[in-house]
Amino acid sequence: MVSGFVDECNLHVTAGDGGAGCVAFRREAHVSRGGPSGGDGGRGGEVWLVADRNVASLLAFRDHPHRRATNGKHGSGNNRHGARGDDLDVKVPVGTVVLDHGDHSQLADLSAHGERWLAAAAGEGGRGNARFLSNRRRAPAFAEQGEFGERRWLRLELKLLADVAIVGFPNVGKSTFISRVSAAKPKIADYPFTTLEPNLGVCRLDDTFEMVLADIPGLIEGASEGRGLGHRFLRHVERARVLLVLIDLCELADCPPADQLTVLLRELGRYRPELLGRPRLVVGSRADTAPGEAFSSGSEGGSPPVGRLSSATGEGVPEVLGELSRMVTEARTSEPVLDAPVVHRPLPPAQEVTVRRHDARVWTVEGRAARRAVALSDLTDPSAVAYVQDRLRSLGVERALARAGAAYGDEVRIGDFSFTYLDDAEAAVSGTRSRSDR
Ligand SMILES: Nc1nc2c(ncn2[C@@H]2O[C@H](COP(=O)(O)OP(=O)(O)OP(=O)(O)O)[C@@H](O)[C@H]2O)c(=O)[nH]1
Ligand SMILES: [Mg+2]
Image (cartoon, rainbow, N blue to C red):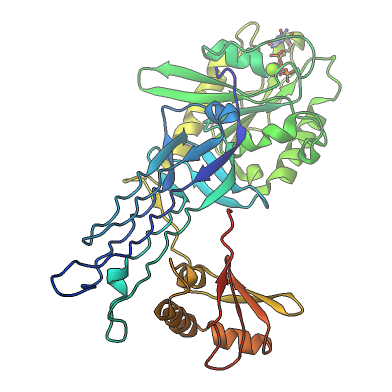
């Protein structure tokens, strides 16, 4: 049984900032400024989410949702590069799904032990002035600043990885069944919605076979639209290999057995149509209260259907477990096997430049490469400005501005840097920077 179960949480990740490049010159006898010798800043640390089978819940993130990798060190003279920041591995349970915090689109699905996903990309270190030496620039007196590490909010959801999800109306005896066949000790009571969060139980049939059962809170009509408790927990059903559908045979049940099945299947199908294709075993529950009644739609292509089950007397329990183990084994063997843990490292963003009109005479330029191009230590230095101009031109920023309709004298902003658009060779010359904290 999982206690203190947390199945969704928010997590804020911050990768390390890159260290700044250094401006330095070699000391040489009789030369006031030797060659440039400023080293590069170190890359910041990355933040990774790593699926770990020893982590059982998302509890750790509920009270402490922030995770941060360390920054890179600045470069220094004599071409010494700054040290890299340390990467941070954040361990999450196997079965964690990572969603975008804003639009809830799925970013990653860590379903195997050891699977890794890059959650926050590190800031690159800035290049030292030694890297800006060229035929035209004999003594570059500027260096590149470090890039900020990526930071963002993520939403984590844990989908239980159960072999069998026990699905049924409230009060049909789901918790009683799991407590009978596993060590799980869920609360059992004679009223609906006793179970408020999923219970996991391991059912060991013999030394070689065990299966994980999940007791899911009761489903009612409308669950797929959020009625009752079912909606929030339907996602735990999603991953189960096999569904055990319990139908209440008790005469006092609100709804006749056939109608119960119709409603349950409709709700499952509305939530995720593919759930209807999942192997399922349908069994009548609390059989001791309804002598002679049985219920089963059979398990597709299997042995004779098990119609009755009583967790009170034990009737039908071995048969149900036998049938479930057969279905689980079949489902497991048809799954692909991961030989090596998967590493998900998204490609770095392309050298893409986007121009947007901010208001009548103000434009913003977006794109990592453009931001990097203006992140220099000293933009009052004429050779730095010339470098920025060359770089922006080769990235196609000027062309994009002209095409978008920028006019002489308009303001153009790139990150915290802004300049006046002059639509000729002078463009980008008069830049200013307003360095603001993010
Ligand atoms: N007679 C009889 N009663 C049972 C049997 N199984 C469960 N019950 C009783 O039915 C009631 C509900 O059982 P639970 O196991 O809590 O049902 P549940 O499906 O988990 O209910 P929720 O968590 O509310 O959805 C309890 O009073 C149980 O003692 C059974 O096989 N026979
Ligand atoms: Mg229950």
